[in-house]
Image 1 (spheres, helix red, strand yellow):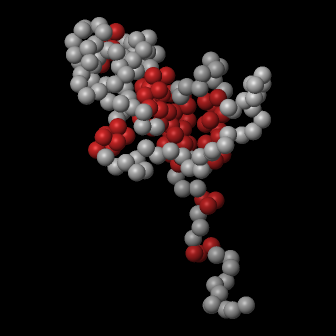
Image 2: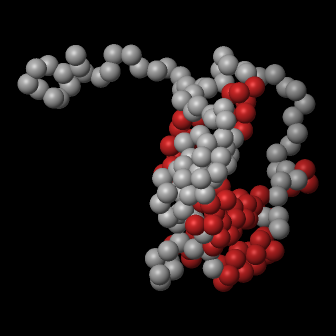
Image 3: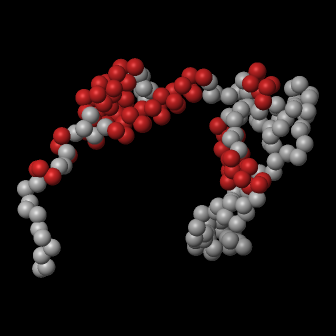
Length: 186
């Protein structure tokens, strides 16, 4: 056993440690594995999504062979494993199709996520100093939530238009202070 009698504290690390991370498609290139890896989990809450993605990642996901019966409409319309409700009923009632609890994800969250993706793309083009300025403005908001407001987006777009190409890092052949060497051996 891993613990001695009367003591529940283990003194040594685990005996067999993985050297590499598990890859579910390392030796299995079947159609089923490719399908499961391309499967996008939607219509469930964040916790259930994590659970299903874990099952897919570690080859524990067992897809349905035939549609199951939905617990609300009682039709055979459940097409995804581990779901209790069909996607239409879950969407209508705005609850998770797996655990049947209310889903917090709304349209506003989806819009905010797309804005964050746009912000990351814009920040990638900025120099470090200006990038940190924008991030400081986002963190300074009085409500405590790190949301992207239209004012911050306007500041960011202004900085992007001003920036263009940074002159401090413009290297050209004309500005060389060093004489060119002709393959001299030292």
